[in-house]
Amino acid sequence: MTVGTAPLHRRVRRVLAAALAGVLVGAPVSAAVAAAGQTVGPGTVLTRVRQAGPGGPIEAYVLRVNLADPAVRAGLLYPGVISAVRTVSTMARLQGAFAAVNGDFFNIGASDAPVGPVVTGGQLIKAPQPGRALAAGVGIDGVGRISTVRLHGFVELPGGRTALSDLNDANPGYAPMLAPNGIGLFTSTWGTYARAGAVRGVRSVTEVLVRRGRVASIRHHAGAGAIPAGSYVLLGAGRGARALAGLHVGEDVSVDYRQSTPAPVPFRFAIGGKYRLLRSGAVQSDLPVAPGAPRTAIGFSHGGHILYLVVTEGSETGVPGVDLPQLAQFMRDLGVRDAVDLDDGGSATIVVRLPGRAGLTLLNRPADGSEREVANGVGLFAATTSRG
Image (tube, rainbow, N blue to C red; front, side, top):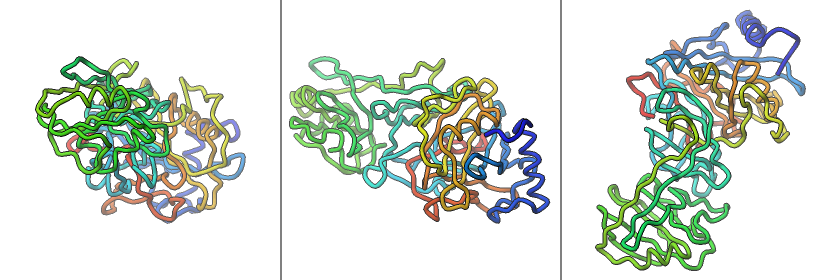
């Protein structure tokens, strides 16, 4: 958001200098953030921005990360299984991140699975919902980028090869992932939530447990509960169900799958986003205008070598929050070239290990009054502790 004619980076310095002088009023933790930006980890600078906006003040926390610095890596935060949630603070602490923000939208209160794709360690561990393949992350070349990520895979049955339709997704409330004739794969990374959401309303269903490459059991309904390590479940609907129903216990079965992306190289880590905010520095014209809210976004500049993680305040914080066009303009003014939004509202969270403070500090004021448990997030790690 532009105020006057001075570039944003100059206005940010003036605003933050005023904060040190006691002019800026905010949450007590804001005083812990240095005026011109504070180094909070290798290659990472944190700033707090407050500026005028069309509907009132805009407040935001910005993490600027030099991905070219070998001492820092950005990676996935998640609870260890797809169908589970944890607070950003908990995930960051357990995985050793020195800073983190919340990630993708998720099936809150049901499967808790994120809506978009999930990649970690170069491996796709969850396929996106239809129409939600947009993703942001860092490639195996260490460069940040925005692209799409989809599932490319197949199952090798005695009768031939069949394409996989989905991976680790069974979100009720959405169109059934496997209807009308697909085969989905569930690994131990899925978790314990019932797999029936993937075939909701489908009459013909077959589920097969494969252990060590051989069919261990066959049943004609979708199951639930943990999938043992070294095993996986194939769940079929319609023609997919009939293909699985023709198997016999003890027969050989194999699966092969990977991420499919038009990006120059595969992602090392990636999470889903809902809307493309910026493309090559241009605010996208199709962004919906919704009421202001706390929001989280991820973006890149300098050819993908600089990562930005942004969380804006809103709702219960005394500021109105921003809509998506305002968020896009705000990030453009920061110097971001490409960006997507992440989950917003009560999910918006930023935690940082501040110099001189023990543990991680929650910087923003969550709209729920406390941290919401979320499906995943983006963590920043010193290279020796990076897990993503």
